[in-house]
Length: 110
Image (cartoon, rainbow, N blue to C red; front, side, top):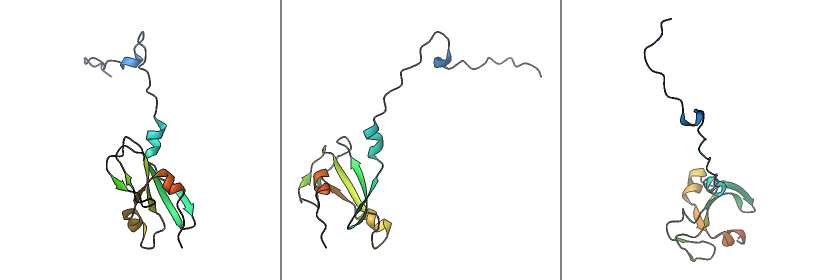
């Protein structure tokens, strides 16, 4: 097979001899887990709970547990029911923002 007159691609900077590889940044595990909802079982059903960090809390919300404002910049939870009577889409549409302490100490009303 004939040789090509085209120059070869330059080697990657980290693969060149004599150069140090760039430092690998640390992974922020809390930020990575923030978007993943966890599942919780309770006497009142199955719940999906998503943590909202201080950085991502941008609006005012009313907590259904204490009926007080969750201000911007305060870490809190977004909660929705997985086993909603009207389906998963209705449960997701009915999601609410809770203070972390209000969610942990909520009472089950029957």
